[in-house]
Length: 226
View 1 (cartoon, one colour):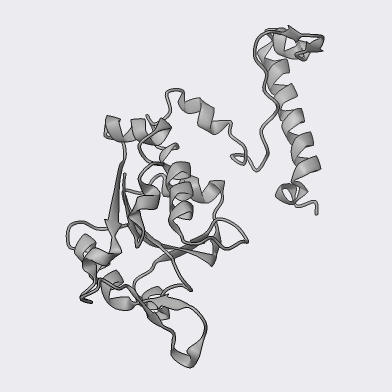
View 2: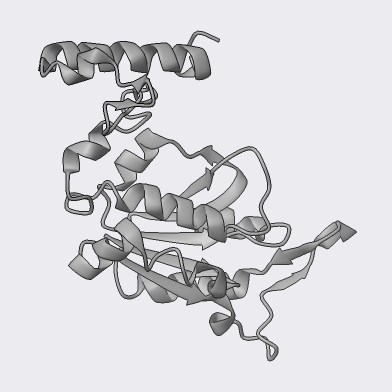
């Protein structure tokens, strides 16, 4: 998978993609992540990528020209499955969406900034708009990092034990069951006996019951019980 991220502040993304699972996935050749400085595509002599909004609204707006130039340059080199814009009013990002996106080959993520981008970019160039939550960030760079992390870790080979990702929270619309490790008894705080029994069927039943109970208590909306 190749992910191209377009941003006016590429420095924000210097760290997140070089470490842990995403860093290893890139070293293995499973994923490629390329950061593009939008200012490099501006025809403005000062490399500006924003201007005042028509109607006198407060705040600056990202302009069409550098965005269109960058996207068209990338599209001239390969086909893209999705051109994504990170925005507070986009579709809410969730695990099923991450699962679906992990099967794609090439995606572009355009990071929003300022008061957003000229609506014509959204109308004519963007194929999918994504929000990571009901709040506003300084820019879409952190949202792009969240999306990339959630997607790349699902690509076969990114995680050593691929079955681990299948038991993550939200995979079955349930939160994960509690997990424990050694020692089995720490100052009287004991691991549930069923997990020490060696009976796989009982253990799986326990995990499901715990996941269901935790979801019902903490996120009943996932079960449609609100």
